[in-house]
Length: 316
Image 1 (cartoon, rainbow, N blue to C red):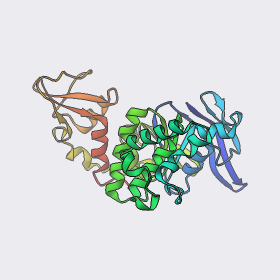
Image 2: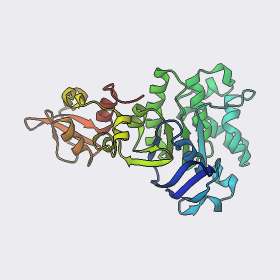
Image 3: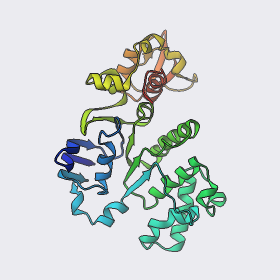
Image 4: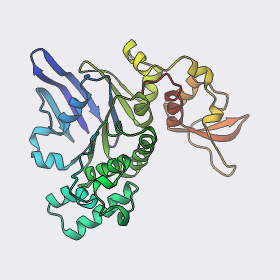
């Protein structure tokens, strides 16, 4: 768990980048910081691994103040992925990934095994990519190597600072899907910065909306969409009222085979409204869909949030 207690960052008396921030980021969750440029989200992220120093307050990881950790120990246990991947151009893909394990004095065979495991984990065939140079890769492939390198020391926490924003829309969508799939496997605590509301709604377990260095609202994606805490949040999310009218559960659900069992929780009717569906999904990540007492499909929270994000009223 990462805890911010009254954390502020002052660059001068008149410039406060972060103002009395209080946050609890749970172990294993995908936590997204979002807000307009200059709101303090990247400063907040960089204070976790002490790339930016805290002016006031405290940040703790698993109950220990970040300033009580050896700086190298702290950073070895926190992976970091940037928008600009910053791979070493003169090194091969394998050598880029191996940097931290080698610094930790891991054996050569162990490092090689770890490199191959990580390449496979991010969807790149080791024999094909291990000995290539970064310039031989596409932007999306380079970003995958950046993710692999961030995980090389098997950190408990991964910080991601707008990692996909420089990619084309197709590569970006694919990497969003891949990082969601990967998270189900690795179960890391991911703190992710973005200015793209569609991205936040798609990938987050919880979203933290920031403005002028302060937290405006923290909640699950459906909470942010359904119950914006202020006009600022409502305008930033920007989901039009027509979303309710356009909502058709049957189009979003996954059809259920007759032999599949019903999921836990009371089923939702195929004719349910958007509001009713979201209310039920607040208690369950996935629900059965029924028509006239017969289970005909399944619906999950992400599918509904994706529908809202794609309505065209969400900033991106």
